Amino acid sequence: MNVLRSLRAVSEASGSGVIDWEKAAEAAKASTDPGSLDLSPGDREGYAADVRDARSRVRAVAGVDFEVPATVEIQNRHHWVDANLDSFRNVMRPIETTASLPLPELSRVANTGSLAFTLGFLARNVLGQYDPLLLADEPDTDHGLYFVHPNIVAAATELDVDYPRFRRWIAFHEVSHAAEFGAAPWLPTYLEARLEEGLRGLSSGGFDREALAELQLAMTAVEGYAELLMDRAFDAEYADLRRKLDERRSGGSPVQRLARRLLGLGMKRRQYERGAAFFERVADERGIEAASAVWDRPENLPTRAELDHPETWLVRIDP
Image 1 (tube, one colour):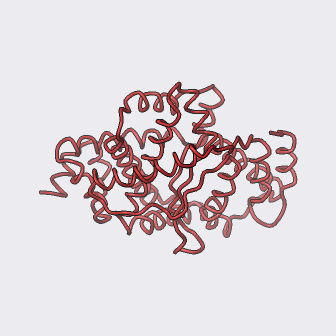
Image 2 (cartoon, rainbow, N blue to C red):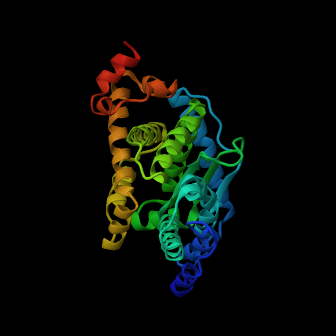
Image 3 (spheres, rainbow, N blue to C red):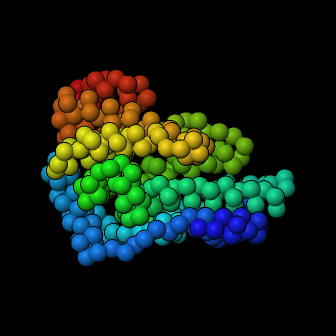
């Protein structure tokens, strides 16, 4: 980790865009220890077995047929930065093509530094990721399934939980996301459309509240359903894992808490909580199959009011 090299990379940001993407990645990696990928044969087989078992269990519990991505990557933190750089670039493209900066060189340095900070912070904290590759240049590209091994090992130590059991639970969460996107072929297009509409509004100085609200509601359903499914499909006790991971999401040092607030990760935690409470109520009332009906069509996504009153969603979906 070299903070001075990171700052130098940001200061050297150049080009014609609002962000120098290569310098942002260079700065993020310079300020982030990549972590060890010294995997034993048992580690490698453990990840593979966890994903296989999670796929079988989730299929059986949810009654949803899906596949996991053909390639499952075990990454260090630098690998994660490289894997996500294009995703960030694709999201920012509508703004980059229309933005007019008052002080372009200074703004480019500031934007590059902000992105480097974001990439570095997330690379040090993300445990696993199912990546639907929204807005990808090649729409037929297979989705991604990543596990950031150094972070999983570090989190298991920090939370004082058994590492293989914790790793397995994280695998169940990411495979649950694969189940959602497998059950809802319309979901990537739906999310992309709302994201593009919202970003077009921002790039023109406006704010498409409806598109961004719909995107937030959809992501609340995505995160909440995955929380329900990972717990119900997991083949061991998980209450202590759930409690400790929830504490990790809201705790940490003052700097970490500030970073999460600046990056909007508190909103993501509320998405987990609100969505999980909704689907728990639905599953307790009608079973997981009823909860899975959310993925039948876009119209089945809960409204903002229904998230707080699941019984009204059940009446609408299954009168």
